[in-house]
Length: 165
Image 1 (cartoon, rainbow, N blue to C red):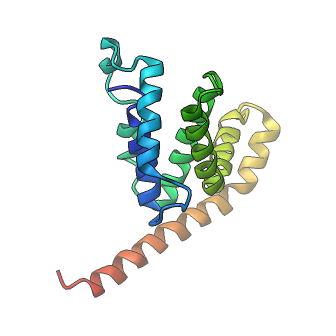
Image 2: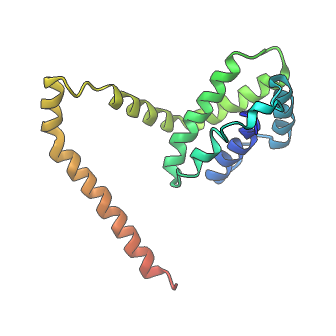
């Protein structure tokens, strides 16, 4: 299946994940626009199926609502980047890009979290100054990890008391 074939699926997941449909988001019109985009990209070409899906498979491992906001904001950014190199004079391209921008704005907290993750990967952990700072923060980081862990245990415990399973 094509990169573009997943567009409607990804957009639907975003909408369903957040429990509402933006008033401007018209999935039927979007499906028609995506069909036109598929034709633009010749997505029925035989090599499209090689290697399997590029986004939908990754979405399945992100289960929590806030986690999904992070990955979906990144996926939307990638679609927007792809559309930068397409013919913006075509109405269907403009419409898809507008819808993606609208969705991207609603996922802005996910974008910030992605930037935080990227910044972490850029840290030069071989740098002595960075190491000193990291050591000074280690206990606080472990405390936060403990808080997160106990919060999950508390939620599970509450669920088990409520569940009549």
